[in-house]
Image (cartoon, rainbow, N blue to C red; front, side, top):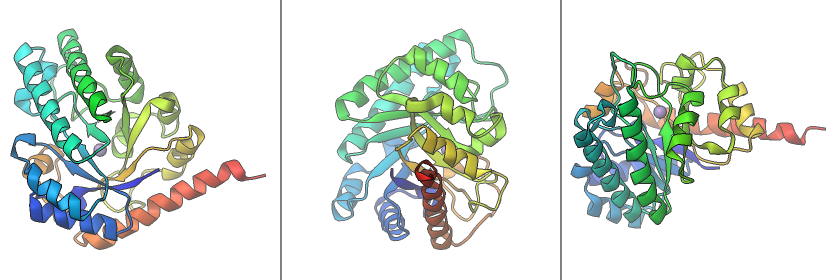
Length: 290
Ligand code: MN
């Protein structure tokens, strides 16, 4: 099990200076993994990132969503090609950073759709993920398909529908990425979706209902962590939190980050690291109880 931290806890810029700050701060707060947003693989300075990684060898995962002009859910082949190119570029970057995970809304942009997904959109998304999965397999990378709420995609909003999509994709190195923030909006509870995913759960975002300090919102973390322990989940548990104190131009708009929920990244990050480890440790102890 690795406890991870989303880069936006520390910085909105992932150039040399931003990345180095994020890596040092993530390691300093006690985490095992840094997740960086790779929303624009084209603009990412890979040589700077390799150089920073050589000095600070903390494992890195990346998350991304598609852009509006690379949205396979529109059902067109042009968008499908653009979406595949974006994922393949991101995988090249991650291969050079020895990363094991590419996660997030790999199947579409985060925005509000006004119609349900079409059959053509679903099929397009399946094709995009298969293409990316085959390249990812060569690099030893696992893809996590994040289940996000209805205001951010129309492809799937619950673990159950995401598992149907995963069946269609049919690739061993693709799994489900659950996020408690989204589960709180769409799922009936916090344990059944985890149990439904079972060994197909590959990545987890731990986030509060308002995306601030863990424990300061309405998410019931205990049943979630107990269900993770029940299924023997051993993958990353990554803290995700956003505040208007730290802005990434694309992501902050897409996620509607308008509120200032915290200013002190170091305090927030250290708190979440202890919170996640405490929840995990307590849930793990249940099996050993006489
Ligand atoms: Mn998330």
